Length: 254
Ligand code: MF3
Ligand code: CO
Image 1 (cartoon, rainbow, N blue to C red):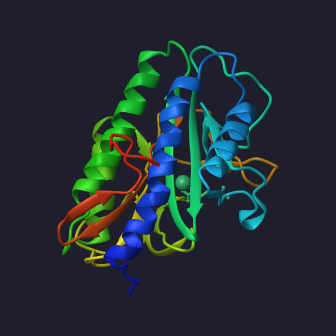
Image 2: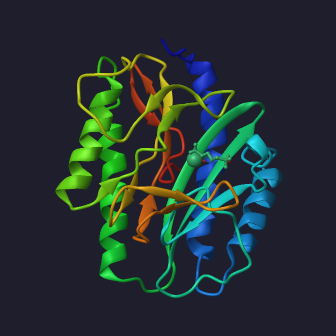
């Protein structure tokens, strides 16, 4: 059984989440044709440090950067590079903010300039999957209820769901229980409780679901070269409702 968090602990995680959300809001303005993902990575690291926090991904199991930057057919864990983003690309930027030992994790897919309808549709449905999943994150439901609604919506729209990477509990460590798969039957899996805090982070492919890992040991691509998008939030389930700790809509100082 996964541990739950107190409201005070959730508030500490929300502080980290607000910094993270503010950083993503800045990225939405910065990601244009010609920018490199290495420049984005440097900006993110500086932004996080300027807010008194640290980039938890850097050094995590030897991962070398503050962000994962996953372009087009890259599913997740892409390394930032010096290659300029091009008009028509899209890129998922994933980061984890550590503020005073408490973490928040959120990935977002960004379009670069004008993108095709194929890309627009993929991003829209992937985001819909995330928010449908969040709707199922209520006390008394099971993790499988989240998994199932995401898989159903992706498949109804002709996309496949990556299985090798899942959402996860999070707190003072990046990866805690429960595992939150984005596929599978409803009604099964761990019970969602008052104080459950975890990520939901569906990765949808336009082609088949299978993954290929590059020789760097990290970069996960679609095996068939099709496109892959991802949206991720950290959420906290409470008696008073579910809080999106990395919500970019929320006003408020960081
Ligand atoms: N933020 C990722 C997640 O959603 C983890 C990235 S792996 C790292 O679980 F090595 F880059 F940290
Ligand atoms: Co993440």
